[in-house]
View 1 (spheres, chains in turn yellow, orange):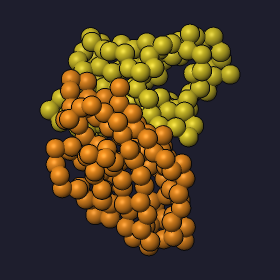
View 2 (tube, each protein chain N blue to C red):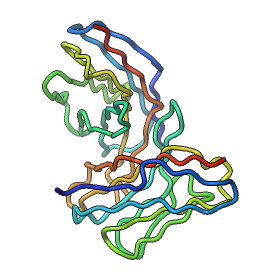
View 3 (cartoon, rainbow over the protein chains, first blue to last red):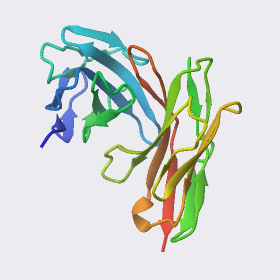
Length: 113
Length: 115
């Protein structure tokens, strides 16, 4: 089955620690995205990548970093510089030839205490 | 910068009735897409319906339809014959058709369908 996987579903970390969230897709999509969702709010774009070894900052990139070494993978690192890291994180991907449709993963709930 | 506003934080509807969720947006672009996404308690984002800005005809998908008013920058979602499974958060979203194709989301409307 083709799709996007995010693991784990729930992640707990202590304040001051970096943590990396996984996003893998087997849809052969070129573009990938990371969004953050806070309680009762909509999604906000953190980073996106349109091609391997290239990525751009979104609206709320501060305190986050990404890499895109493989087409299938787009990991997000939440660094200790992110002031409010507790949130729900969603990864999405898009086929280069279908500009309007993003497919979302199931998300990871990160709690930092 | 584009903004998307959903003015109804919460709404409720009786099963089998019709409900309309509101959305307004602001942009100076002419070539864009508008979407409604559903997020049930599982938190999986599900695309409900899509509208291309260049199309005058309103999009429909089974029980879901939109009222797209381009000049007014309004994009409402009508759910007919509401079902208990429609209970979810609904997000209006906007995408400019350019190199990045990023989505900009509204704050969401929590819809409760009552039996």
